[in-house]
Image 1: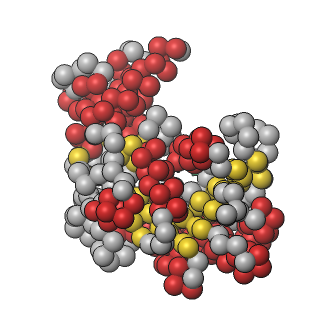
Image 2 (image 1 turned 135 degrees about the vertical axis):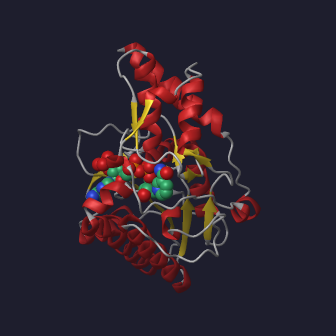
Length: 319
Ligand code: NAP
């Protein structure tokens, strides 16, 4: 059997950084496509390739050049909010790029006769306003430019799977960690709570506290993608905890983790942060991933929030 050689896009992101660590630990040869050259820190042993998801020909050439046995597509414009400002760029980076990576993988497999496996970081946003619980049979009906781009990519992965490529989609529900940037609501909350406790910030300015999301621990979701790629047959898998919590629950858990019981007066509502098109509730049913991949989430909600808060308290204390 050929030794595993992985090509990873998005290696500098939250998930990509955990994925690279997991693959290196397993002894896999890891090639990462990054946007910048030496300016970006990658773990020792990773082979760096400078490229961009907007460069379709470059993506196909990269796959042909690296000759990976495994392609993990985690790169993309990953913010729903940003996708409203940049719908066409989102379509290109999060949607069209996947076509080039799939074509590159298919062509490589045809040329060398060696199988190439592909996994796509799909998203619960492809389900739009569908009521919970969402699973693999829930209709694809996105309501945001980000969701539409992910939906296109999701369909294209299925097309290549039907053609004979071992191509899987993991339909990822929200997953968090201390590596989430503050542009995302969870990290905005935990970093804000830490600064409030340290006296560096007065209040948290929030949009919609009622939206409910299914939040899990990012390294678990990365592990699900590895499991999907290594599974005998390719497929589509909802990756979620099966439980939802409101943004208000997240705020309360974050203040509790920082030792603050009464927090309501520290939170204000600002319509600028509200996103009216957001689905009221995302809650995934991960039964298929459990049954076929032996996957299960390992970190409960309160512990996930507490880990992020502890990290952010350490950061503010370190100055
Ligand atoms: P992230 O932290 O935002 O990382 C995105 C990665 O994509 C970064 O490495 C970024 O590189 C790269 N990227 C963006 N535009 C690029 C371009 N034009 N060319 C090359 N690389 C580009 O996202 P994440 O949270 O790790 O998520 C990983 C994947 O899962 C994404 O596809 C995301 O849409 C999907 N997903 C995430 C969640 C979640 O809750 N986290 C849920 C569902 C689906 P730079 O460092 O150069 O910016």
